[in-house]
Image (tube, rainbow over all chains, first blue to last red):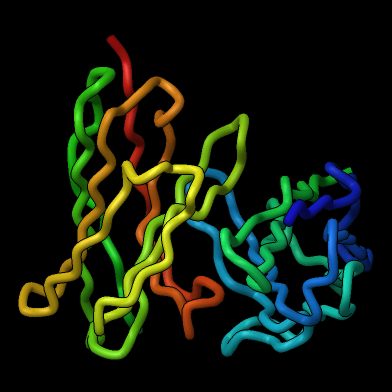
Length: 106
Length: 117
């Protein structure tokens, strides 16, 4: 299953709200996770089952969608949020990841 | 809070076998799924596979039988073996804990492995 994220890069500012989209090549129901990765670090789980917030993750992050179209929204961007975000499907193996969306400071 | 740490060689030659170890601290290995993911600039994040503590496994078929995982709960470690290396196996390798065999809730910091003649 292929996952396509858009946009690839997003230039934004502190305080903005942004939405990242992840489209699956076939229905994955709600079996989607979102991760945040900073340069030189491992990815960090943010959201699972499309809309469930992982413990300890800020409520400024939210996920939605089902089937083939999903989104990750980040409200009131903070300096620490500028990173790369990946979606991952676990509907069927082999599990696959999107190519990533990088948020950079405008 | 479980913590993971990869260890192993950083440079290998084509046709050699890669062996990496992941040390687990801060939690029990029992009842969890333990796996590996790698990342390259070209292919991005690639799921390699995981092994459950009861021996059940899920490996990426793209690796064509070159990949295996072994879990040693007595040492709080699990390991990766990848045979018949090529330059395409050059990547950062992450060990991970897989929640319910689905998504990845704990990651090691990653280890860069370069395959070059």
